[in-house]
Image (cartoon, rainbow, N blue to C red; front, side, top):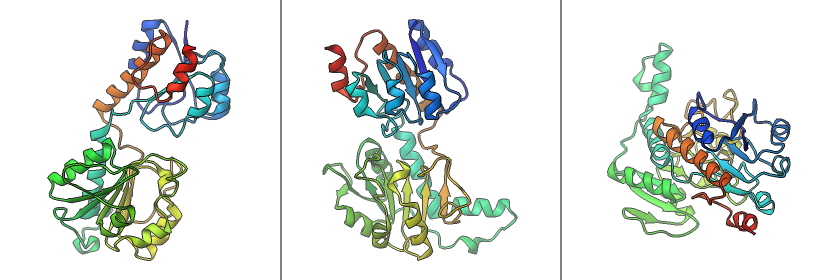
Length: 321
């Protein structure tokens, strides 16, 4: 009987996962927490690991001599030691396109909330303060410039939606791309021209604190920052200082450096900052897609087949040899 360790999950039940794993008579082991000591203990002699946000480190990977596959319940891979998995001939898979519309829509919702002060007014009225002037100024979305940092699948999806609203869209990234309705610019040009800047790049050593003091200083004082990608991209201390100094007008952070974040500390406690709890990927539709495809790839690997989204082909090649 194959054994599959689930490190953590963000939905109310595991019916989908259990039903698919039952096809190969696999036992599902659910970790009570995602801490490394717990995962090392539970990973002993498992054939597969499924993980949402918990870190699958080298010691966790080495806990099982028969580990064949690590399946990421998501897109990003910064919580998995992919390089070490490859040396162990363990394939790593993800679901790279399950929530493109959800993240783009969440980023767009945050743009509206910032421009129209929706969150601010809602919080005020729920506490008995009905005061239009308290949230001014308000901004028209049409005609404003949206800067997209990272024009991958989600960035392109957001660009299409924003352009349909009459926004001017500029973008930058590692590789220049020609996308209808999008002006390709340098990073500095995006910082200086944009009324809204939305981040859509992965967390890597190169993108650590991509937005720091120098970058905030180049932004328009009336501009807003939106991050639905990874918390490591933003230097939160520098963001707090930039807000205090009036270098930008506000921010919306669906992801944070530490999750859950301390809502009592700056910049999270600033009324100009909207915080959502890493929710951009979530919808009824995206969860069914994610859970089904992530688990199906585990079954493929357990049956000796190559899953559709192997991110480390060298690991697959090593195992085949």
